[in-house]
Image 1 (cartoon, rainbow, N blue to C red):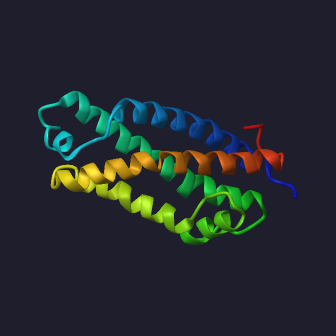
Image 2: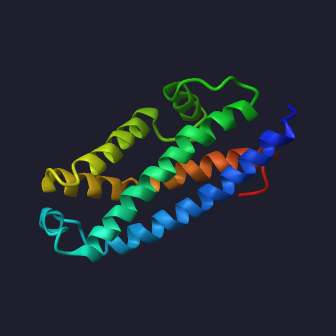
Length: 162
């Protein structure tokens, strides 16, 4: 299959962006989760600006990587395969069928989790702490999916090796 040069360039750009986003998320994750993030930590965010900034960075980076992969890379990946990109659920299902993501349903759950981290930030420390801990556990899910999709594109010769 012949992939248009412009699409190849876009995918190569997205690959560079995603590589940076993965590195930033992993660094923030390691800094925030030296130990478990507790409800007490969530209650004290107003007084502990250092932790609050790490939480903000983690939530932002978690969401950014998920958005870049889900909203930009997946549709461009399908287009590069000669397919018509669909709704996010269709794109996720296709990636799941090819074994590139663990589960489309899990991906959508993580998207809701990201929204929960943003909107419950001030309202409920218990929900925030739980959402952050769950997101921490699934950083590897996002990283694995990102690498699998980039690896698939590289394996097909569409982008330079990743």
